[in-house]
Image (cartoon, rainbow, N blue to C red; front, side, top):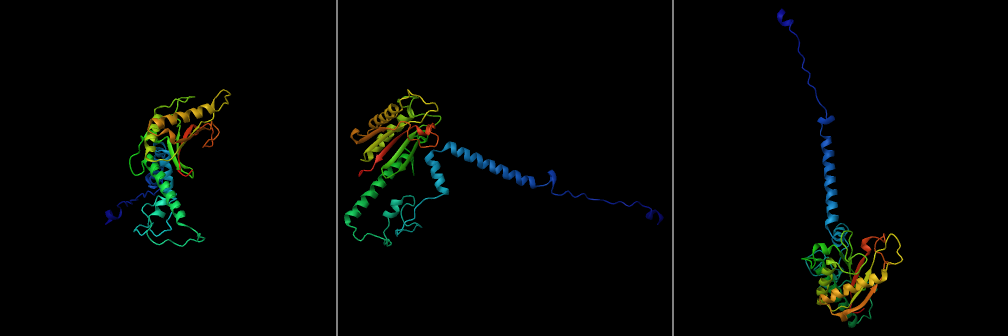
Length: 278
């Protein structure tokens, strides 16, 4: 008994490490958020470099849609009723149901007015079809991806405007000249072939970017007109009849499209596929 009572008492103390310090897991969450943000950043930079201006516009429209909703009963099973949710005219044209009453509708409307609207819609659809073929909407484009980076289109009251513009790394024409480079030649010949599928008249307008230092001897007017003339020759070589070209002008460096007048984006040739009634 005496030996038992004199035995030393051993106390074990277990050290509990908290969540702080480098042994915790909070830093892993922060690191994962950082890696995710960096991945998103590099994806954004890759998209900006690998896509054309038209494709970037399409991506922007995906997050901020501007698709019109048809006011006509389409008779279809889709949510929008028409055949194509991206085309305003298709939505209004493909409906087979009853038109909704329109406030302020003109009771004196005649059949000729309806025929005029139908012809207008058909012409817009034709121009949109040219735009889709050019940009490869729903299929392969008629130009290479590198050439497509120099093209942007827009449909206006005047017609289908096709802008062919310089990029910082690739120019359409030789510096301070009117000689077209290979990318401009490829685009011009392709447009000449494409325009054979319609009968619309064509207008061409040349533009130049300004220079940082004012040069008295810089012939901006002659250069802009000369580049428009070279594009005319390429269109005709591609198969466009010369009689369909109704206007050829040069604007010099007077109408920049971006804030910086010296930006390469301002050096461009505008080719307008005019509406037939213009």
